[in-house]
Amino acid sequence: MTLHGLLLAAGAGTRMGRPKALVDDWLTRSVAALREGGCHEVTVVLGASADEALALLPGDERVVIAADWATGMSASLRAGLDALLARTEDGDAALVHLVDLPDVGADVIARVGRLAAPDALARAAYAGRPGHPVLIGRQHWADVVETLVGDEGAKGYLQAHGAALVECGDLAGGQDVDSRTP
Image 1 (cartoon, one colour):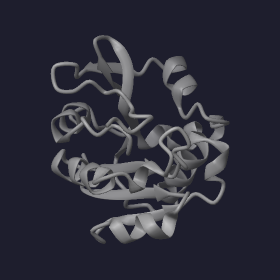
Image 2 (cartoon, one colour; image 1 turned 135 degrees about the horizontal axis):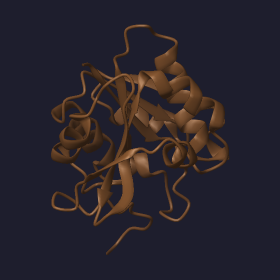
Image 3 (spheres, helix red, strand yellow; image 1 turned 30 degrees about the vertical axis):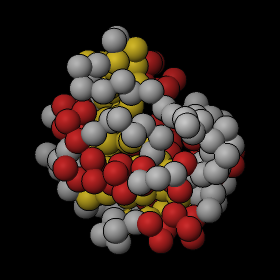
Image 4 (tube, helix red, strand yellow; image 1 turned 30 degrees about the horizontal axis):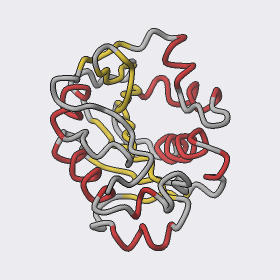
């Protein structure tokens, strides 16, 4: 099974005060976590301040610009999955990760990624609460894209189709970071 990492890093980070892709080393750390966690290739979806964020990337990943990034997470996920759908060699599953989860490392990616299969649907859980990363098998990509609206991402699709929860609370907290702490 081949696993493709899909990093969503397009948002403006309004509560953060700047795009989260530009915060510290989150972008490079997230790409490294996907690679070290078993993703054969990584696609990064950028939007707000894309030129600045692009300059921070190591350069061995694919980049997709979500032109409508301001409409919410669904725009980023749609742009990423559409890019994967356009290529026939992009793996059996996509592992979707968010740039604003700095404590989620390669160990979480690897644990969720072990379920990679064309029909897979799974997501990390932290103390039983669903979170990210999310594993979406190739067979679901087009159907997920059809359901995407607003800032929900694939949440409704995952719930409706019984995505497996993979407990990762022993590895990370899985909390997105919305503001800079002093």
